[in-house]
Amino acid sequence: MKVIQELHQYEDGLRPPAPSAAHIWVDDTWVLTEENAAEQLRQEAERLCAKIDAAADNARRTLAGDPLRALEYQQAALEAQAFKDQGYPKKAVPLSVSAWVVKGRTARQAADQILAKATEFDANLVALRELRLKAKAQVRGHIAKGKADLAAQVADDVLATLRALPLQA
Image 1 (spheres, one colour):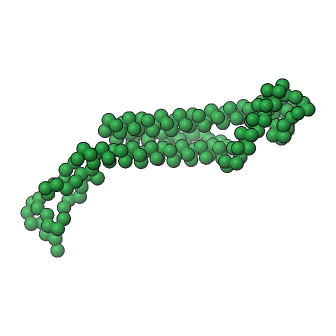
Image 2 (cartoon, rainbow, N blue to C red):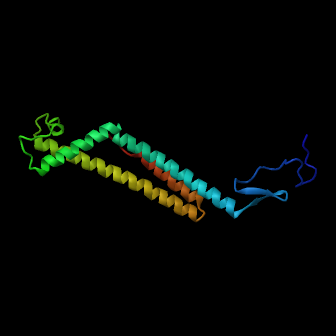
C-alpha cells in the first residue's frame, strides 16, 4: 500500500499526474522545461500537419479517382492538345478524342472539351495543393510563436474546408 506521508511527499513514485507531457518531476514537483515544451510544440505541429496532409490526400484521391484513370485522362489531354496544335485535322483524329465524338460533338468540340476538363482538373489540384501548403505554413508559424491554440484552429478550419469541397472525378 502506498501512503502519502505528508503534503508534497510521495512514497514509491506516487505523485499527481503531470500537467503536460512537457513537465518533468524534479524535487517532488512538476517542472516545465523549455526543451520539453519546445519538443511538445514541434510534435504538435507535426501532428497537425499530418492531419492536413491526410485530409488533402483524401480530397485529391476523391478528385482524381483511380490513378490509372487519371493517367488515362492525362493521356487524352495530351492527344487532344496535339490534335488542336495540328489544326484539328479531320483525317488524324486521335482515338482518345474520337471516343468523345458522341451526341453530335465534332472532333474539334470533343478535343476542346477534353482540354477544358483537363484545365479544370489541373486548377483544382493546384488549388488543393495551395490550400494544404498555406495551412501547414500557418500551423508552423503559430507553433513557432508558441500559439498551439491558433495552430489547432488553422488545422480545424482547413480540415472543414477540405471536407466541404465539391469534388468530382
